[in-house]
Image 1 (tube, rainbow, N blue to C red):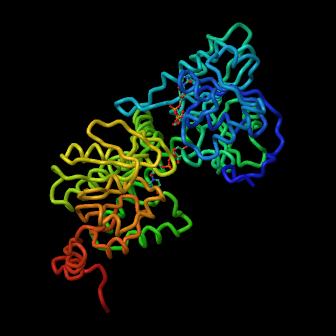
Image 2: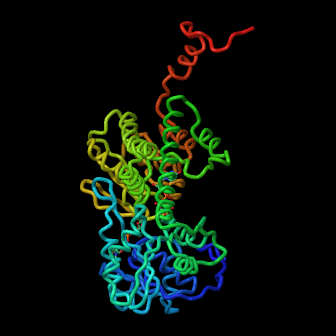
Image 3: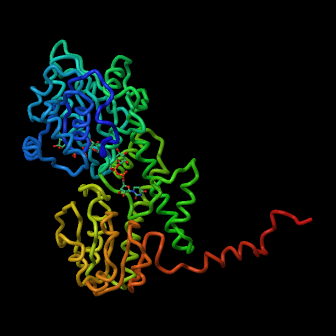
Length: 469
Ligand code: UDX
Ligand code: UDX
């Protein structure tokens, strides 16, 4: 059993297929390496010269456990190669996967220009009938529109069809997720094409075959639901704080209901990353344009913005003011296990603290950001030295091992805000810290807890719903 793939080294035997993967980012590079592990011959096209040069030297430009091993192995088996030359990569290829970014525009709508350009270049270079497989997350209708867009650009006699095969992998566990999917979704409007794409995966993996629009919507709706779940957890955590209830017990108890499930119920500084925020706003834009406003999704988005603002407010309340205070922020990546800082709540928090007049010193084991006014140090104890407060903003496991006595000795203040729930609270409290968290911390308001229920019991002005015999 391989630790990163969760599978034996001898994957199910598949018909080897020559695949061109376009874009060597988190999705493309993982897909390329994993498809070569499954026995396919993969040619990966990357336009970024620095990224390509690194890959050609055998260096992995992103942090993703297990990926380096697969890339090295299949660079040497010859099943995985990298190039910037679309013509040679597309030569005699029947399946090309589009894995370029689909970032949000400033108005929240998806920017599909990279995708259109990459698809057109691939279609022009195709030397035989080809399936363009869209792995990037896109609004429903994109595959059909893309087929119309590139249709006239292929050379005579070459037919280009577009298939949706969304990728569900999580950063930091991408290799494991690829080999242990909850489902493989293939959206194609013709059965022969669906078979070709489904045939790239082992037959034992759960498969959903559907139309292209449906496949595209599976991905959007899944990420939107995850976002809703997290925002709801944050809302419950805020309520626990106000009512003096135990957040971990409440959400733990809710998650034990098999109909709900405990995953994605961890409260925190809000969800981030390159997918959830973008797909949520994409889902909202799509629903809006279809005349079916997505009220639940909108609420999740608003709640997410509020989660971050309320975190900054809580740190400010704990310190009295942020003006001139020194805050150590531990963690910059959007979540533990990745070097990705795109739409990172930790980085957003740093900006907010700087805006409110604080000096911020940050640490992250692997992520780096360049942010005016932020100093980044290589050791968590260096970050906390002389700090008025410590904020844990990304849930790296190593922060669990910070020694309370050493922290107390290094810091000049005694406020700790654990926004991601990784620290053991008691030893820190015993060392003299005031420790806050999401759903735990600042004073509970007495009135809604006892007074309002009493009023509801005794409300004399209202007729009672049930008459006693
Ligand atoms: C992916 C998906 O594509 C996106 O839809 C999903 O929602 C999030 O993840 P990701 O792999 O994270 O994107 O993107 P990124 O890391 O930006 O990688 C894209 C790569 O494609 C980059 O290396 C970029 O240089 C490359 N690229 C882009 C090309 O090779 N050709 C192009 O035409 C455009
Ligand atoms: C997500 C989807 O999970 C994946 O299926 C899709 O392909 C890409 O988008 P990823 O962006 O890697 O994956 O991160 P994920 O693990 O989903 O976390 C997203 C954000 O939600 C992070 O900021 C994380 O910290 C936050 N989160 C997650 C919570 O705040 N609470 C939780 O309980 C879970």
